[in-house]
Amino acid sequence: MTAFVAFCLALVSQGLTAWALGFTASANLVRPVIAAVVALLTWFFNQAILDALPSRLHVALLSTGMWIQCLKTFDDLCLSRLSFEGTSPSLTKRLSFGVSNLWNMRGVDTLPISSSARNIRPTITMSASSDVKIIVAGLPRTSTTSLKKGLEILGVTPCFHLGDPPAPISRVKESARVLAIQDRNERLKALKKLYDGFEAVFEPPASALVDDMLTIYPNAKVILSVRKNPQVWLASYYGLGIDLRSKWYRILGYWIPGVIHSSDLIVAWSKYYSEKFGLEQVPSEELYHKHNQWVHDIVPAGQLLEYQPSMGWEPLARFLDRPVPQGEPFPRVNEAAFLRNVKRAAMGLGSLVWLCLFVGLYYAGSFSWSKFASET
Image (cartoon, rainbow, N blue to C red; front, side):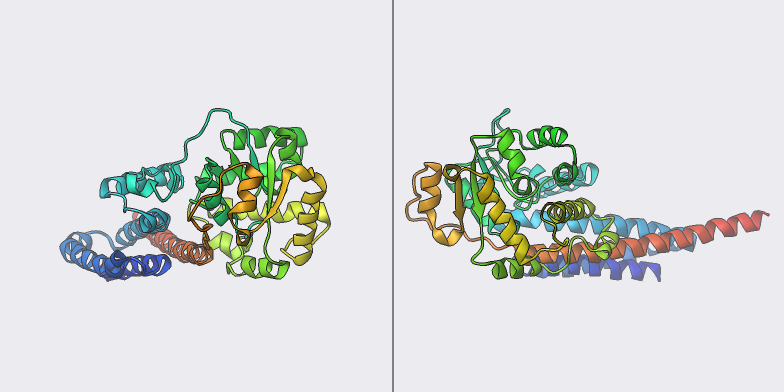
């Protein structure tokens, strides 16, 4: 019976992966079928061995296996960002990445990228102790991913952006910590350390601490990324679905790498603006207006460009003293669907982990108690 449960849970887990990634690659169409076949064969070959074990120990082992399976599935979600946009990583690279990610709890930019994929997603090469030259001061969900792609085409690298590709979890954790620091001198040192080696920086904490950033990098140029109007921005922000600050999101996704740290960053971001502008800790039209006006007030006019991708290459290239790319449209990237699916997958897989953990603990406790009772 427990082997059948293992088969069903494995199939659900792999099916959830295919749903979350989207059926955009042919390999994803057969993923659930392959998972079902492998699970079924495992069931047949191991049934005799499993039946020889005490039932409670059997369920505890099953729970542990499903916990590992859920983490592996979430790793697949991260790997999809690269495999969809370029040549898929080899099996050896995927396996080595999976092991290193579970061990170090890092993100996808630790994965070796094939040469053909480099043509699509530039390799990040950190320069030693270089100063930040560009601060993108727009709020999250103001086309910052498209702007990052545009800057890379103009030769601005490396760029610090937590969402594209998904950054190492340690970097998300540090960003949340820096944004929550109250002492300004300590915060300035932490910002300098966090952004050391990057030429352009995006989103919190940089976009929320523009005054601190200009104290550290007084000659940096500032790009205020905006949307057509605050209503469009709010629709984009709330279009992501699940609120990262939600207690349910934090609880259900607790075991999934990166969930708590990304939630901490948004919580710190909301609290910072609430205290700074005297607003509620939720995105609003007033927040959009106050933030943009604040940036205009503190940045010298000659160092500031208010920009949105619909303006094209010319104003951006002129502001940065770069040649205008010929015959290449400005990149348009919308990650809303991907981010929604990652959130759903994190909650779904996290729920499975909690279920397996509770079942495992229950049967392990029952087994231990029965052994203790029989001996006494």
